[in-house]
Image 1 (cartoon, rainbow, N blue to C red):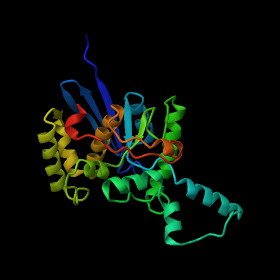
Image 2: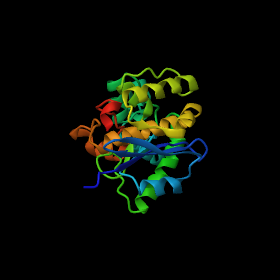
Image 3: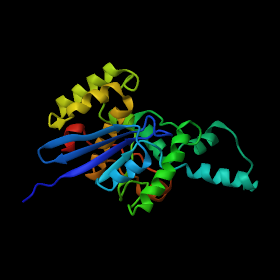
Image 4: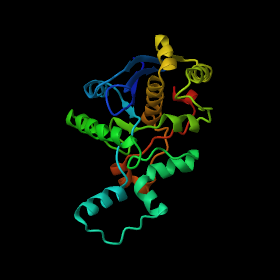
Length: 250
């Protein structure tokens, strides 16, 4: 019997093609191989790859908080049901999604706010990308429960693994150390010539992490949205947090 092969992809999405990185990993029972690692990627390439993989992890918020969407709509029409509070706690309901609160609970750190931080610019591109993926015939479920897309957060993945990620985005030496740790914990991973690009580019490094998390999601090894938040996750997005270590992904 032919051995099963799976491919997963990871996208470190930026507001434009520059600094957008794409990784593809091939998985088989013997090991995993980084098959592709590309910088300055456009939407067409992401859609092409998404059609060839089991899961693609996108490092970007896939939606906005329900409360933020309702607030902006009401504000445009001046139809607020109640006076605008304006206080810190009220603002947080607009700034953070349910999945952001879940990540905060699991890792102790808030993700960037899609409605108040510059991440929103990338999310605008992501909204168009999700539309292109759906138009190509792929199932897009922002909760990640089905279909090809899953939202990921590489920094949170490293925190779930309890790895030291201090300065990893800005320090190539830290990324080299993390790659060495990956090779120790999962010696079946073949980074090939792509390892050096992961060292020199934090975007490339995060794309590979996103593909790892996509593998966990494809195998049902991520924390799913609670039943009471499933519909909200389908609108807002849901960050996939691995429930296993790197070594268990094979």
